[in-house]
Image (cartoon, rainbow, N blue to C red; front, side, top):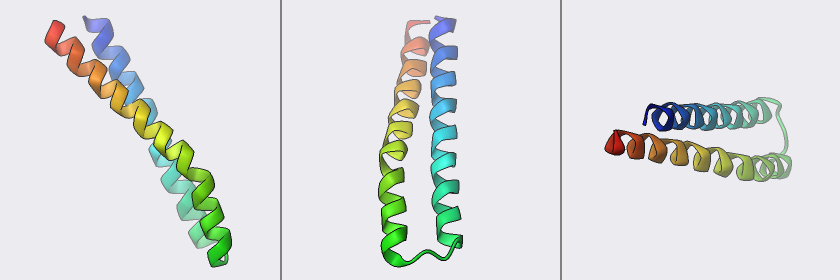
Length: 71
């Protein structure tokens, strides 16, 4: 069951890295002084990546919990 725990931790870490990337990308767009419409377009383009990273992180945490319960 250790493999479930460690693979889940790796998935969670990958999801966390994706979330940090999304935060940095939107923050960079905010500091670039874009117009309101351009900023909205940038946020819309980041949103699928943000949701995907959140999904990967949640799946990783669920895998860790399953590994703990089975171990």
